[in-house]
Length: 243
Ligand SMILES: [Fe+2]
Ligand SMILES: [Fe+2]
Image (cartoon, rainbow, N blue to C red; front, side):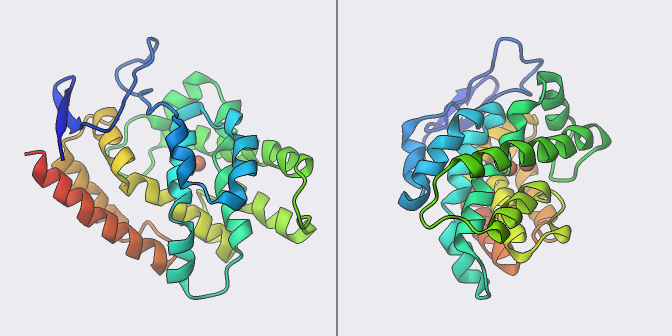
């Protein structure tokens, strides 16, 4: 893997990072959306993803949602227990749609002062609000979309609950917990790992250590933790290469 200089740090060559003009420090840094990320979306969910996409551009949510979705079948296979694939997929597509309804200051607060995965007091308020706003936007999008066959009222409610509880998965159903784990896997992916080393101003070695430690208690399902461990091994190799 090739690395390039970004400010005073190294990141993999294939990662494009943009800093908006109004960004205080690197906190609003993001990976720009590109068509190539649509390839991560399963064909049967592509139309709905495209319907949601205009509201997914805040906070790298577009790239995050597509990449997290790429682990859908893997987590369901590993989970080995009853899961509703459509509910999980739609819940994941919608889980962060509420960010588009928040102010820039709330988004800055949501990203501030944490070096690992544990949330601080500043990040909590906007985190709670993006879930509440997300439920409102999601309800409308689900009602306006022609699903074939139509979504049952129960499935719709479970999708909305998955959006509402994705940061409090202990309150959700097993499908909501799978959504939460797919969401959380984002931190362990190639794209977000390196993006976060810049955004959080943490060395790759330190961030790898933080994620490794936090991962043990971070997932609701065993399947989520298994995939996270695999991703951590990939990140460890990359961190070695970056030295
Ligand atoms: Fe979220
Ligand atoms: Fe998310």
